[in-house]
Length: 420
Image: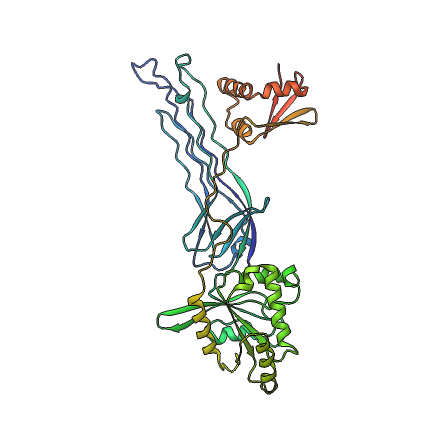
């Protein structure tokens, strides 16, 4: 089954917790703190596998969660970091953030990787909290929470040559004549409901990949029929064979309609090199109309070729001409700007306080992360978090907002009590 769209949830692993521990050895009465750090949580990575050609596997498994890092141990032993979770996708997969619509990556090359969620760092052990005034720290950090995202995956086939045209023009028959592909072929519109790929051998050293794009109709650029699903597969191709139905009442109108729909969907599609061919030369009616149709295209300065995909007349020359254009065509460009963009970390001093029921909620990813990394059963860690709130001005902001003793303060998944 060919599936070219999917939505999945991914979550990286949480960092391991740091340890509170003190060195205990014979004849060493005051060994000092030696709690180790937690290990890093596993990343979630998308990797291109050349053996895949569809997103069908994501119909059955839609949630991917990486392992957490291990907790730190005594004698300053760092917990084991988790292995990354590799999720394999086919070449041509475009990755979007499902919530924001932002383009995260365009995966085209075998082995290419994209880190979509980074694992949380391990919490620090109590060794890091030793100071001249606190030589017996009973404070450690919990591991940083992992990231979670919902991803939208779109597959855009990677083919050298795309075969386009109206329904029932003979595209699948042409693909079968040029390659070893065996698409479904029948004499009615929309036989092909999904793109088909085939490999054509040009000579001993040259092969090209062809894609039979299902028939486009008027309004395809607005999503009429299955327009969006079909049109996006043309974006990857470098050369187009525009196949026309020789039995159509007006092949020139069909030609203009398909080009208009492609230009409306993506202006770059209209600039792709095209070879225009009239199919079904084995039909007497097409032979009779050939000169008239050819003259109409000549007035539009379009060179028209006559072929029969069924009888395989002229198909080899058509392929060689497409390969000739392919050699001169520019290489495919990735979607969007693939230059790495520096995105600064959120300023931890920025936060927002909103009223929530009988309490108050503090909105800040940095403060929420700090709360998640605080072991609330350790008094030293709680005092450290309180000092952080004072330093950032959260206490003053709550007071100015009207917080009273005993009010609930919500930070992420935690509920605290406000006290002056």
